[in-house]
Length: 490
Image (cartoon, rainbow, N blue to C red):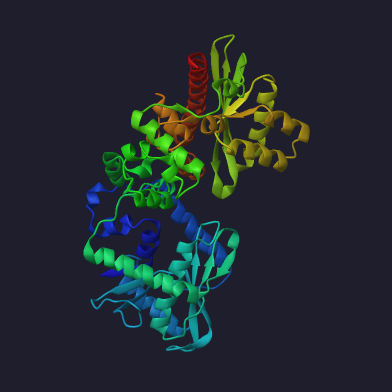
């Protein structure tokens, strides 16, 4: 059996993924997302940036031929080169590992860098230290776990004492992992992984939007979860809360909808318990529910005017760039709708786009600006600061913003799997022209646009952004009508 650091990382993110990679039907996998390919390219560039002017050596065998690449890596270590890029470490057998297994296991690791340091090893008076380089903004526990695995395997291969591995994240921030606290954790995780794979016991499905979005098994697992009406599809059901519900014997929508909140509140906060029960009721009956705030009070926070602006942003996080400010102006008096795609065709045009946006909103001074997330607020503050917009002008724009996400989450419970604009607007009947695409896909397209100047890519992003603005408009219209009718009913 082959056990790699990738398997370990995937297991910590989702136990099902390594199981399906080993035993699943490959035809059930999705094509690898282009956004994932972009992330890998960014990670490789990040590694090169960390290296800077450092002289390094890299094995020539392809990564897929891990045995040949491992032999080349070992040869470079024997020569005592200062730095090895993307080397492969591998060893067959469980000798040196604290594992209760006797069968043949081959351990494989692919640290970003192997850096020569002083010490003692089979090579001489030097040894190597493993360095992990990740795109994350913080040193996540799974990074440290993998770093401990790489350090252990490296110590066995070079016959050296265990040394603290290093993890480098965004902005070149570096952390040294204290090996001793993580060694037992890592070996316990190895036992869990190997036990699962040996027994072929398929782990239960659990849908987590952030983690599942990048997995090729996402649709396969999602279909299973939908069929089961799995509780992980409910907003607010985290892995820890799911365990708490299981402790109470609650494993279905019906059971959660009929549960006693006083019993739930023994294991979680009372407002969380009540929220989960109401979410289950809304989902079970496929109907939105009002929270305790009176409809009239909510309506007073949603202004109406003869002209209204609907605003959405597309950004490229890696470049810290907001390249498309989409503005939909709805003129009720003239029964007109006009979409303005304020797009930076190069990163250098961001300032120009920002000025265009300020001019456009100033031309419509009485129009409230509807959006759906905190991101638009933060972006206006960022761009105002970056391009030295006057405080008066910044405040003028900010006070006109109306965050419909805030209105929805404070006042309503929707029978949707999450409270993203796409999920809610689709439930309300709105359809995107690019139905299978996402904001992540737009990040990839914009990157490709900068490389290829293929106008079709930019036009697709613009269509997607326009639909985001129109979905916000659709939601606001529905929300006002729903609250008004609820007020009459009450």
